[in-house]
Amino acid sequence: MRLTCPNCGERDLREFTYRGAALDRPEGAWSPAWDAYLHQRDNPAGASREHWWHGFGCSAFLVVERDTRTHDILSVSLASGGRQ
Amino acid sequence: MRFSGLRVLKEGLTGNRGWKPHWRDPAPKQAYDIVIIGGGGHGLATAFYLAKEHGLRNVAVLEKGYFGGGNVGRNTTIVRANYFLPGNSEFYSHSLRLWEGLEQELNYNVMHSQRGLINLFHSDGQRDAFVRRGNAMINQGDDAELLDRDAVRRQLPYLDFDQARFPIHGGLLHRRGGTARHDAVAWGFARAASERGVDLIQNCEVTGIDVENGSVTGVQTSRGAIRARKVAIVTAGRSGQVAALAGLRLPIESHILQAFVTEGLKPVIDNVVSFGMGHFYISQSDKGGLVFGGDLDFYPSYAQRGNLPTKEHVMEAAMTLMPMIGKARVLRSWGGIMDMTPDGSPIIDRSDIGGLYLDCGWCYGGFKAVPGSGFALAHLLATDRPHESAVGLRLNRFRDGIGLMDEEGTGAQHNLH
Image (cartoon, rainbow over all chains, first blue to last red; front, side, top):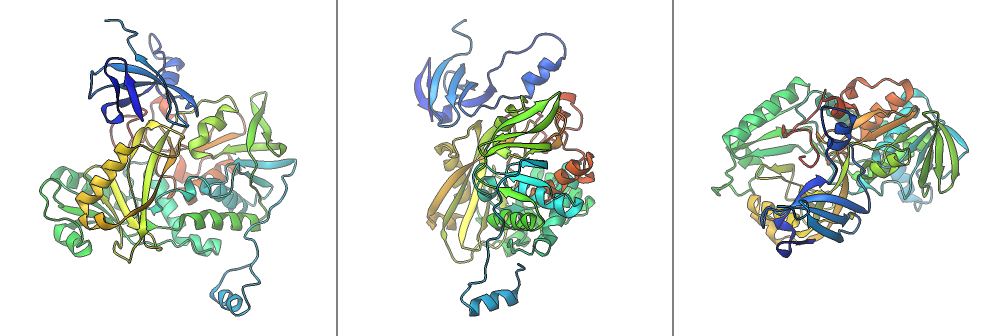
């Protein structure tokens, strides 16, 4: 499995760390939405939207769409959306 | 049909014409009291203990593929009870006691071999951690012995004792730990459950879970609708997809764990050995293959195969610990789908839907749990109360933040265990 970092190009899996499902963080104090965000998972067999960290490269956080059945990479973008 | 030495002798002398299939192959009925989704080790054990302990025989096990074709037939076969935390300790202790009587109970040779498990340590800190773990095991009523370097060297002379980076200071020996023939565990439970009247149905995929007014009423399958008063989801790495049929999300991510087997060799590794450098463990099957593995790949996957960095790490660990195995050729490797929970410990509990039960989250430790899990889930299904060995395995411990069982002490978050 190789990921194409928007900053660095196609790189080996060793440079990246999986950082969890890409979910929207709830606002405010504890609520069931926090339990859903922290613990509950769709755990899809198929297209999965994930955060990866290019720690041994440019250290950008990435949003990766990946097929969990085949390890095919469907898309990679910066988690910041290009904001500085 | 009972198995015995006499029977083997008689069949051997009469052309082996008297053997019969190990279980019946019934068509599914329209309704059961209890339907178990998943014919792996845990599901088949649950069916057996429902019939044996609770006299419940109007039970079906529905399996999408064939019995024992999932993780129970694709693991590294280690059986142990060396957990540290309350909740896990009593559960795995109970499961190991069930293992010790399993072959007599099932009348089936599962080749349970208590050959001893040795967890090596390589620093003062690791020794202290293993002393604490050993004391917890003894307090639970199980066995643990601390071996010094010389004692390890007498037992495992083939390890590299000369290297400076990961010096072997000693090991924690769990004599009652060992291995078992994984397929035979599934077959033994299947045969014993079938003999007691449970319907075991293969090639039957559950495609829907029927819920009315907040309670389960049955399942839709590739072989028609089946009504049921109670339904248990026992589908390991596929728990997320099956639970979604009932509209549930679970605190589970399915990750990949790789394992490796070499060509058959003469007996060389007598015990189960784990290396504290990172995560590496090895044993030798009765067929002669070295069976070993290490860490997860650490990303979600259903591909049943892993990537090269983890293979490389496992091979490096093997060569660092026991350079002799560099001459063995790896025959095959594979990836299992591990149902990982945030704290690395399992779930046996009711769901929020009436009559729908969950047995999942076994992470990379499901094999040794097979009898204990089946016993505890059968108890929960039959009595609606958790068995005393499994009161800690609650579904809502993550939501509530109470009773988390994080053996590694790294936090109850996904992707840390």
